Image 1 (cartoon, rainbow, N blue to C red):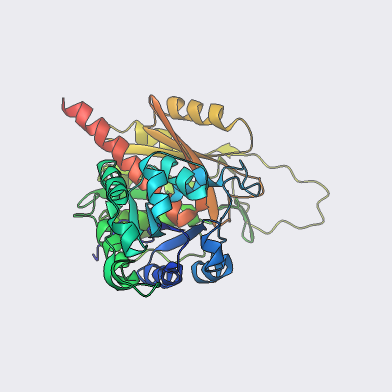
Image 2 (cartoon, rainbow, N blue to C red):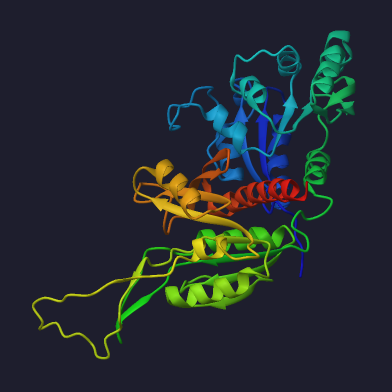
Length: 409
C-alpha cells in the first residue's frame, strides 16, 4: 500500500503585513498550493496599500479577511474560526511593527489578535530596512518571540527597496515554503499496521421488483474517513451500501445492499479489526418483498415494517470487540440523542451531525460534527468532509490510545 502524509491538504494561514515585500507573498501562495496545501490569507490595513486582497483571493481561491470582526461569519469572530482552522500560521512579510506587537501581547488588529488566539505553530518571515532589523529593540523582540515558541525564518542579505544593502530582505518564497512543508511531514503514519473497519452509504430495502426504500446518504463522509485512514497508514476495509463514489485506492471494498447484508458483513469482519466506524445510514425498518410489481390501481396500500438488526449495538457486544464509533444524524435534540445512543449502545465514541439544515448533512460537500465519548467531547466546525474526516480520525485514534493504555494498566 502507498502511504501518504497524514494531512493531504495542510491548512496554511498566511498573514500579510505592510511592506514592499508583500508582492513576494503572492508567489508564496502559489508555492504552497503547488505543494498540496490549502491556503487562506489575512491582511493588515497597510498591506492593502501595497497589494490588493483581490490578488490573494484569485490565487488562493478563498475570500481574504482584513477586518478583526467579520459580520459575515456566523459568530462574527472570523479570527477565532481561522485560528482553529489553521495547522500553521506564517506571517510574511512580518513588519517591525507586528513583531513588536506580538512580543508584547498586543491585540489591536486582525493579525495580532489571531496570533494571540492561535494554538498552532506560528512562523515569522521578517522584512524591513537593515537599520530597523539591527536595532537592539527589534532583536530583543525577536528573542522574546522565540521564547514564546514562534519560529523565525531569517531575512536575507541583499539590496533593499530603499537602495541600501544589508540584512532585511524577506526570505525567498520557495525557501519559506520548504520550511513549512518540512514541518508538516510526520515521521511515521500514526495508524501504521492497524486494521480499520468502516461502513458507509445507505441501504436499500426492496418493496417489489422495481421499488425500494432508502435514504439520502451519499456515502461521502464514510468514504472520506476511509481515505483518511489509508493516508494515516491503516489497513482499511470499507463495507458500502449503494453509492456513486469510487472506492479509495488501497481499501478492501465489500459492497452490500440491504441492512441485513450490511449486518452480516460488519459482524463477520469486526473481530479482525481494532477500530470500527459505523458511518453508514442503515435502514431502521424493512419489509417483506412482494413478488410482483405493485399496480397503481390499488386505492390504498398497507405495509408491515419489521425492525432491522442493530449493527452498532451488536458489534459493541462482541466478546472480542473493536473500538466502536457510531454516527448520529439528528433533526432536533442532537446532544441528548447522541449521548443516549452512546450510553445505550455501549459505544466508545459517537459523532453527531445536524441534517435538514441549510449547510452540512446528507449529500453536502461540507459537514460539522459534535463528538462525544465517556467524560469528554469535542466540536468540529463546518468544513469540507475530507478535511473533517482527517480531524475526526485523529480524534478517534487519540481516544483509542487512551482506552488501550487504561486497559493495559
